[in-house]
Image 1 (cartoon, helix red, strand yellow):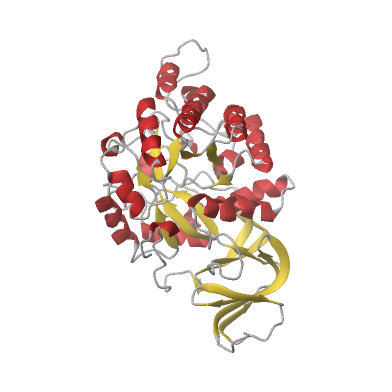
Image 2: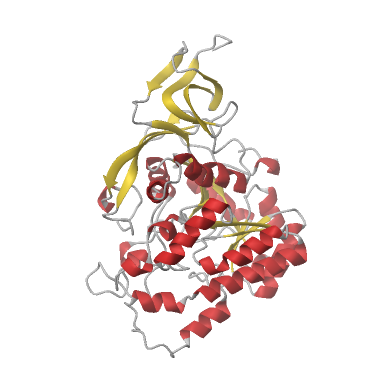
Length: 466
């Protein structure tokens, strides 16, 4: 190094994704940051010096902006110890935790502090937090207080969330929340399904298709495309009325893409994500009783999936995040008789995919001729930009030393029992994916059980120490 100081770590790679482009590089790390990027053979004195084999590339860590950790309150579903180990095993170096399904939900500063106390000693990747917008905390000052405490934005449901302690907002309350957040330029992130449309679908007996709790087709028909499209139209109306910022979570329906394109063309501050499971699976290949695939909104048909891929490529959809939403095996297969099949009416709706999210999207991109660096853009740089973490999601001088050694062409058949999240159930069981995560460094330290706890993050403009 130019100043002669010994580095903590140097990682040498024949292919490193440095500021969005591939090059041979020696990435030099000190005190958790990248301090220089040199040529492959540079003479650097470092405590740890790693040279990646030729089948591995060096990537920035994935920033997963949509993770349900559930601790405290429902730690038997997932907790920070298991969730962050799963993240590290999948090349994810930063997660942003959703305000539910923990008890209490993160709708007050006190609840946020309980989350931070739970996460701090256990987490092996960096952790930030979303706040929640519910009817009870609108107009109370809680949203501003959470914003000042450093949450990255506020989640709201426009239809029932599935847990009683996190009720949804009406359309009028959506406008109220967005107006309140616009006062301090807070970000509203929205589960966009319209409750009136859900009620109408539940009462529609006109179809002659098979019905019943185990039938996947019936589950999809219970949450039709129009439910998402209508809710997103409500979000766009609220943006237009308030000048606020909004992010649509887990887009599953391609029928909403024209609405999204028009809103963006209008200059409204709208961003959109989809999830690995919507890009990987399709309704035609999900069997009855296979409630490991249940999520809301649902996984739709193959043609719909291909339109989501196209929308990612053309920029209509901005980012991809896992929406890791685990539960116990008993809840996931509730209503079934054999513990391996469930009833879609009563089983928990959520996909456990944190450890596999990057590999799943890369596998689909690889099949479609989409470059690895494009996937990194969606899942690292893009998600870091969404939450406002400019030191994340890139390999560059001054950036956090969150690095991943990744073998993109290594095939892997997934065995749920080998995964690190708490409960052994996932839609990806027995899937054949490409990519192996060989090593994950968080702040220049190799992630693992012996590593010191990672950082708890706050929004950089919050003025709160992390």
